[in-house]
Amino acid sequence: MISSYGYNLKSIAMVCTMAILFFSCQDNYKRSGEEKVPLVYPMGIAENFTATYTEAREMLESEDSTSTRVIAVLTSPLNEDYNNLKFPHRIFPKGLLVNYYNEEGQKSIIKADYGIIYSATNVIDLQGNVVIESHDGKKLETPQLYWDQDDNWIFTQEKFKFTNPEDGTIMDGEGMDFNRDLSFFIAHKTYGLMTIKEESDD
Image (cartoon, rainbow, N blue to C red; front, side, top):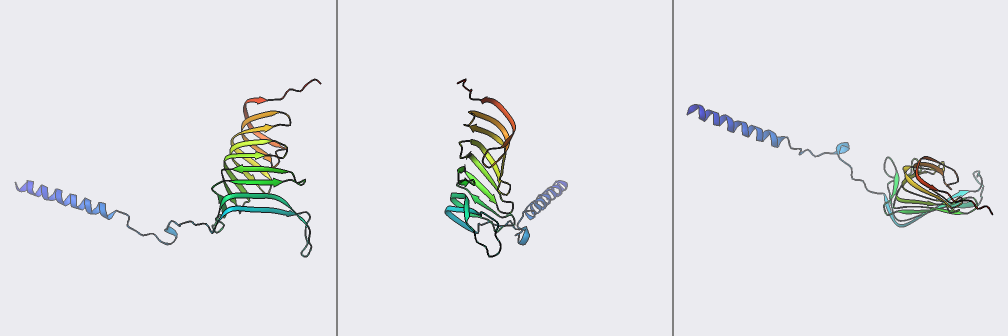
């Protein structure tokens, strides 16, 4: 009887010890400083956002003046500006439309459901129903692409559909690099059927 009583006391002591250890392991530590997960807020929010990009027609000296031309107009229902962060960027959560113009003033468009402009690298990440339509009717459709504004080069690793009314072709593929007006491109992989317009003998 005595040994049984002692065994019960040991069991109760063991349970109490485990309970104390369990509750003492709970994370009640309040983080601060660099440990604390920062709350990220935009430095500015703009509704019905429009930005016009221009360039000078010639190089300027310090006191020279010259005319400029519009090279692109970006519009969006909503713009969130995070240029206050270490990796500055702007987000267009409700989509965007870019009208851009060549030297002859001919307009092409890019539109997407979502966009991010990375200010440090000048790269635009476009996502969701991305469509490019050039001034001469060429059309590219893809779920995501990147536009390097410094090099005027656009690329995607996703599936795409490219329609060229000049030669009557429709190309399906995956992965593509091309210039801004779709006059030069490199398709990484093509598959399916390529529809080619037959030339008449007239």
